[in-house]
Image (tube, rainbow, N blue to C red; front, side, top):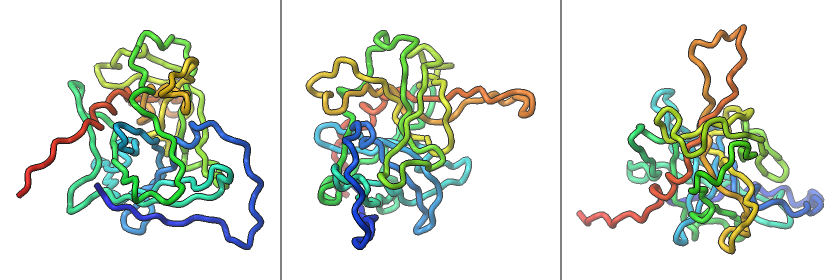
Length: 272
């Protein structure tokens, strides 16, 4: 696993502390802002969310956030924002994670019969997290695997950072409303994603696509949301007339059950 480095972003001590905000839905604390870097040079803004399995903590985002050969987007590290005080959300720190160790990529990615899947998972070292870091994470119990339990008119949320925009004081993401635009459980055009109808922008890549859990179990009551997908990109028609025709306003969301494959325990590598 990669080593990590915290980068303090605590307000100046001579400034009066802001009033304690009202408690926020844990969904806001499960989705950190993601920034990509090449050395010290900032590259892009993106979204992500935490996923926990078997006491292991992961950051989930889009694969094209960590590498995109087509556009020569080749960062060597990412930085995520972590909250340090549940009573004062203005206290946060940037947490840096290298994308390569000894020349090898640290993220996991997957593919299926339809091709590559635009999801990447990076395991985070819990001991390296800043003391008091507040992390709310989805788990396998949050995955929506019963496709028939998602009606066509289900209201969804996309939790992310469009164009990097967010509550810069409290370091919280914004929510965009979405609806399912293709049958949930059916692989759109044979690919491992479904469509959503939502207003999205660059920077939303890697965002969690969720719906409210109306009957949370003991395992999900602390984060009462169902995880359906990972937002990847907007979908449009290549032959659309840019003057006469509006954008379709549709998006690709990869089915979140890919996380079960990407977080499976790896067999120990043989020693050289």
